[in-house]
Amino acid sequence: MALRYQIAFLKDDKTEMERLAALGQEKSELEDWTCDQEASALAYYGHLQQARRKSRRAVDLARQAGHRESAAQHEAGAAVRESLFGNAQEARRIAVSAHDLSNGRDAEYGAALALVLSMDSALAQTLADDLEKRFPEDTVVRFSYLPALRSLQALNHGGSSKAIELLQVAAPYELGWQGCCSVGFVGSLYPIYVRGAAYLAGRQGAEAAAEFQKILDHRGIVVSDPIGAVARLQLGRAFAMSGEKTKAKTAYQDFLTLWKDADPDIPILQQAKAEYAELP
Image (cartoon, rainbow, N blue to C red; front, side, top):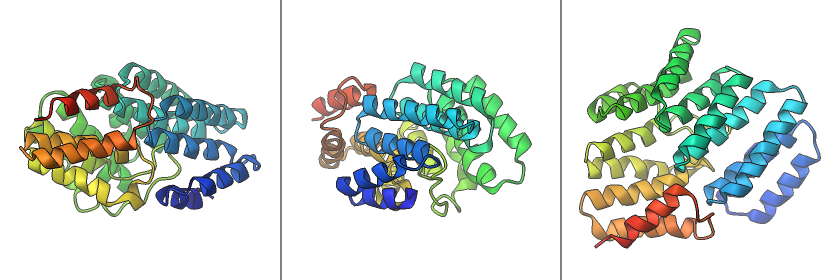
């Protein structure tokens, strides 16, 4: 069911998405995951208030069924979304709530990711250290989760070069991960996204653009992960930094078109509009 919903999303087949969501809600064992999928799809287009309601419903259903790990994963995904959209305080609140529910591998990673994206490096480091201690041989932890977290920690302390260096271990594998549909964020390209952010921080616009373009070129991996939307804005920033004025305008327009009906109070949307207005 989840795969069929993702295919419908990639085809922008809203009728099929609604049909599959209705089917999922008829099956108690799928209802929370169905709500979570709907939340991700809504958030991708900037419908954050609706996404929040779906996420809360997913968490409530999972908790009522006694599935604390699933509830934590839903909350972790929502926290990552809030952090990427610029709602740091809300992201921290949800991330802590997710970790209170479960310290399972994926939920703990999601909570740590949301925290470090929201500049809460201290708690994020504690969670990252715990992941490293408990899953020393886990391939995903070693070559995706930890490199992204460690790199963001370095970036938060002004170390863009160090951040890029820490992601080298992920490079051979980063396009090989399958989307983790058991987590509230379904894509697998966070090391690429973080590398792009590090290049931006280091004023390397062309290199940053290449990383964000990778995300846009691999929709089948990213699916409805929020970085699929945010990468469009980041691509515009990268082109603007490198002096590619026409490409920058096009990238900003792509993001603003995608979010043409988005909630107007989302911080990154407000930033995008202001930045676009200042383009030469």
